[in-house]
Length: 202
Image 1 (cartoon, one colour):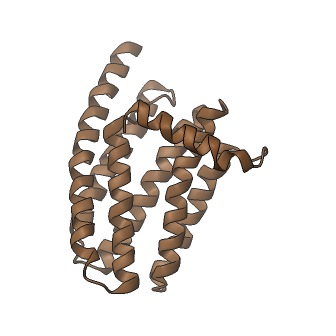
Image 2: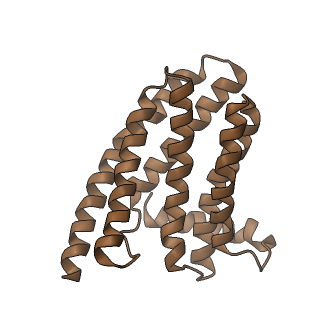
């Protein structure tokens, strides 16, 4: 996702949804909502209420677009939001994917996707510890593309579990392979920019 595309998304939300947005609602509130929805989604998956899990997963994924756009449009970007937002994204994807992998071994590809996200997450936390600062490299187009493909892959798996229609299986695999490819690119780019950030601080 280029900066131009991100600006288009921000402008779209600003001209539509954000006109009716409660003034007291902050971007970090949506991030916290995403954290809250994670156990809800896992519970619905455990009870095999896949339609409900699909709905709340889609809602949680939407809040990722909302909180970032809202923060940029209203200049409410906070240091903690910079950390909590991607952390919520990764926990949403990692925990949902691990649950599906554990209960439905057919989706073994999910484990590879999870490993890549865990590596990026550990590297991010390590960077915070090394620098004694919560500043980390922001997501570039590879990271944003990875998140989109991950979400679409998981949504199509939820659709398969909800409808039992086999048509969703090959579609989900396409998205998941794209998620792995962009995930590897994202990990490489993130590592490269992290090293540059460490050198700048020395």
